[in-house]
Amino acid sequence: MKCAFNFCIYNRKWKCILGKLEINHLGTCDACNIVMIDEAFLEAEKERQLRELEAAGLVNIKLNNPRTKS
Image (tube, rainbow, N blue to C red; front, side, top):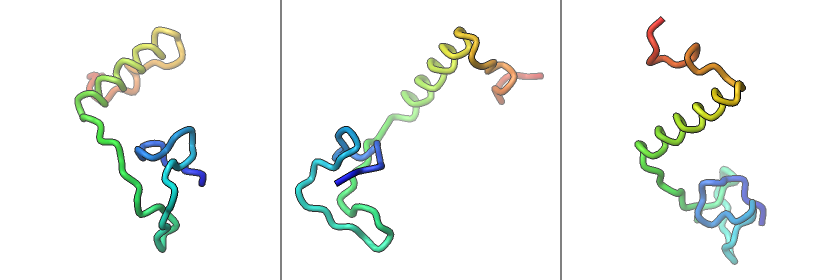
């Protein structure tokens, strides 16, 4: 069965690896188990990727960064 939630541990290449699924009244899988990501890691990764985009000239994060004083 197709799976659209990439943070579920059962999602492999957009397909659910479970043999049997139970879909709830909202149309989502009741067995979905979400990967937990450490907040510090997530923020560090966001900053790293933003720096890469800025270095490539694709974005100017200084204009959009709420921590930067105008």
